[in-house]
Length: 204
Image 1: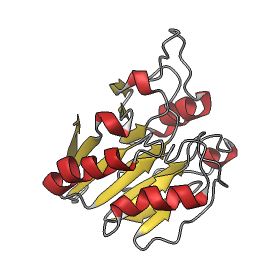
Image 2: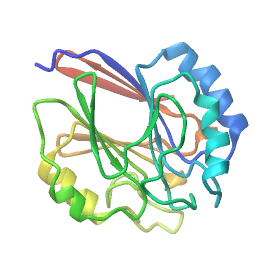
Image 3: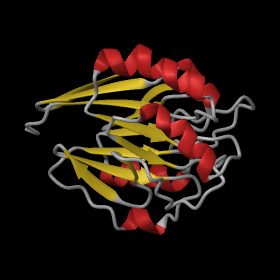
């Protein structure tokens, strides 16, 4: 039994839309009152650090883990000087009895070879979905990440939050893992409630 109780709210693909993020904070975060907020990349739309800083300031006062997307013109390990917010790309960060694994866009697949499952539940915060799961583009092609797919199949984290493929917003089961593509922030986000021995995830 995990013996934890945590609420996580996930957003992705903000694309510099501060108004949408502020609306999501008012509509979702203020109601759910999560322990942590995760952001799955594309914080900006081809913007750099200063733009990203202005966007994420809309989440000030919250505990936030974020990764970078393919539309963020920053180094993948960039840490913004925002209190309570942390880029977790290429790292495992334990918080409240949960292991969070961060994967920005174009991550080095060698990192995943070093990630092992502990006794804690594991939540992957990835920009890209795993191949073949919540990753179907308008063209009908599956454009998710094959390395993430292999990792999920072998390690079986409890939950993967992702974005990138806006039109594939939704959730699916990949073995024992729930994969949630939270889509564009302007369309909402997702809420995961982890309780003792089980958890529930809903798009909202």
